[in-house]
Length: 325
Image (cartoon, rainbow, N blue to C red; front, side, top):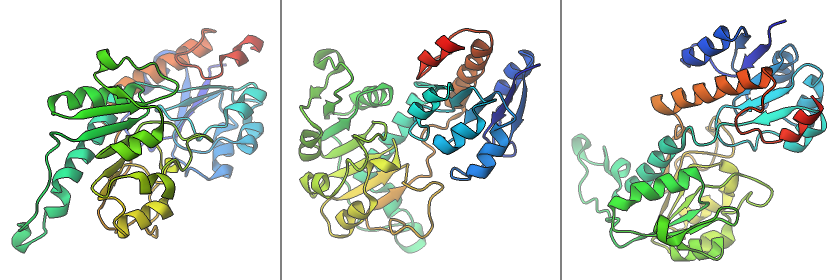
C-alpha cells in the first residue's frame, strides 16, 4: 500500500505544489490540513491514519506520539527547530524524527538584520509618527562602531555575520557546540553568554530552545545589557522570560527589542508584550521566503522518498531507530 502522509499546513494559504508533485510522483498519498499547535485530539486524529507527518509547530509529546506510533513512523519538521518534538519519546516508540536545517538560514538572517537596522534607526517607530505620516525629531544611530553579539553560531548566525560584513561592526559570538574560527569568520569568541549580553550593542539569539537555554534572557541577563543596547530574537520565544523583558522595556533597562517569535504562537492578543515600549514584533515570518520554502520543499520531499526507500533521510535526528526497522 502506498505510504500516506499528513502535511500540517493550510492548503488555502500555502503553495507547496513542488512538494506535492514530488510526493505524487513517488506514488505517495497525502492529506494537507492545518491544526492548532496544542490541539492534541486533532493531531492524533490526523496522524493516526498516516505513515508519516510533515510537521509544523504542533506539539509531539509522550501522549501524542504513543497514540499514533502504531502507524506513524516518521515525523519530519518543516524547518530547523524541533523543540516541539520530544525526541526521547519518539525514540522509545521507534519513531524517526528529522528536520531541514539550512533551508531557511538566509531568510532568517535577513529578518535578523532587518530588526537590527530597524531598532537602530527607528523606521517603524517614526513611520506615521507625525502629521500626514511624516515624523519629526526622530533620531537613530548608525551601526558603524557598534558591537553585535551572536548567541549561537550555526547556519543562521553565520549568514547574519556575512550580511554584517558591509558594516563597520565588531562581532562577538558564543556557541559551546560549534567550532568558531575567529580569523576565518572574522568574529571574536566569547567565553560565555554573559560576555555577549554585557558587551554588545545588539544581542541576537540563534540557539534552539532546550532545557539549557529556556529563558536564557531573564532579569539577570537583561540587567547585564547596556541601557542603550537592543535585543533581537528570531529563534524561539521560549528563550525569553517575557515578563522580565516587559519590565526591561518599560523601565528602560535596555533600549528596545525586535522579536520574530513569542512564547505563544500565533501571538496572544492579550499578551502584555503587545504594545510594550520600544518593542517591534514580526509574526514569525523570518524563515518564510519564496526561495526558502522552495528549498524546504525539495528537502522534505527527498527525505520522505529516501525514508520509504529504506535509506537514511536527510538530517535524521535519532537515526538509531532505523536499526530496528
